[in-house]
Length: 111
View 1 (cartoon, helix red, strand yellow):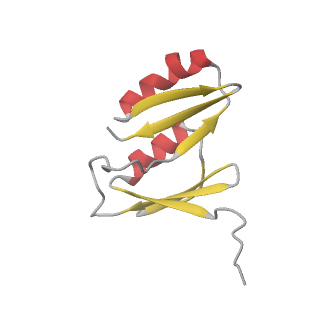
View 2 (spheres, one colour):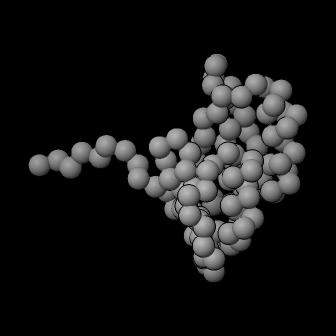
């Protein structure tokens, strides 16, 4: 018997600063907070839930391999370059934009 996965329930990210991480995912990327506590938060975007979990052993440098999360967004090119680039720099992130018409994919790396 094969267990057929029908989707993702949630993704958990270890973070060093819950309020800062929550602000980034909520204010810059548009995730909706569903539950927030001292040590973490659950956010929702579409059908995906994201858990931010405070972890004292969180890695503060980029991972050396290609592990990443890519987000699909429908936003005008001018919004990406004029408005989104400033918050990305504010949160210490590098933004790379790959255009696949009519959807823009934005990949954040902690570099």
